[in-house]
Length: 52
Length: 257
Image (cartoon, rainbow over all chains, first blue to last red; front, side):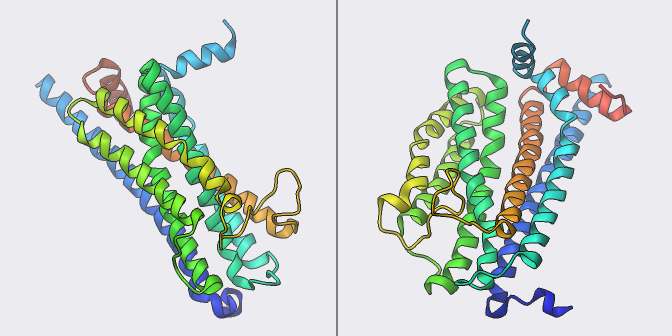
């Protein structure tokens, strides 16, 4: 199994690059989702206050 | 009215843009995940080893798609910037400001993965080479557009026009990045893919396939994140308008538009 992940003497460079790529995109995805959620809650709260 | 013209006008209106793009979010995200996973698995485990660079060349499958996206997104930022500056289109503003963070992120990925590839191949993480320096300038341009916008955030329309001006000026950097390896002596290699079928670039289909699949995966992810961020931008800047309240209420009660 470990053979599959073996990149010769370049293990560190290859897997770090893949890690940087995936981590950056995942962080971006989480960031957008949480910003959307937060803004929608804010607008909902404002609407509730206006109606009350 | 011509359907394309009608679609263009519809996309220019914030409520219609929000309604149309909402349906595209999930398909784009699913396609991005599928293509990225396939491209990575194919590139890392099935593509043959390079005869000169060994396995280290596999960094290409994240580095090159990210580099293409960093420039492609800046071109979109520039075009949306022109539309913002001349026609003051709200949706163009949203597309421009939604594209900047993801463009900057792809530029950071390009620089970091390039450094990680440079160390084993060139013996150094960084060199003030024309390609690397112009890519770093691209990152500063993205930061500049975000910075100008943030500096005037009490007046978002004025902020967007100023940011658009910076974005338009920065377009000059794109051909410099593209042709830097030909104009100046560079340690950076030439183009990875030659559209004209020239002598340069990858020839082996088993290497080219995962690269092209990754390029599609990153394009789909960009469309997802750009639509998502532009929706956020429109909701934030138009929250006093009725359509925003309507959208939020509908989403809360689970009504489909």
